[in-house]
Image 1 (cartoon, rainbow, N blue to C red):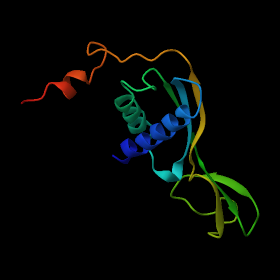
Image 2 (tube, helix red, strand yellow; image 1 turned 180 degrees about the vertical axis):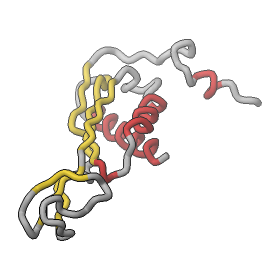
Image 3 (cartoon, helix red, strand yellow; image 1 turned 30 degrees about the vertical axis):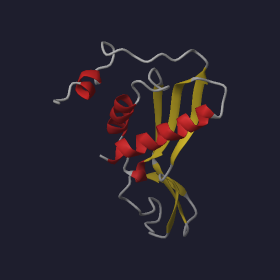
Length: 136
């Protein structure tokens, strides 16, 4: 699942930005993801929930905006939406098109505040027992 490594990179970027600010915790991350990236929203959300415990993003909310694929026909000049596999102009049938949207993967916004950060206890962390109860 490449969504886990993508979300780790998003969080690393967010934590780096947080270190450069006077804030102490992340409250919201807003992403825009193009359909052509093949990044799936549900696995990405799962990765976010799995990676955020006991971090400055532990109570953060993730907002994902999925962008449809949009292209420009270089022959007839129209812009049109299409699915990720139909790379043909919907007006004239030409395959001479230029992709306008669909490959995006960007952090549009990070929201943060200065509430103090306390480590979570094992009762509140669903992964705590899994991570700490290991055979010796």
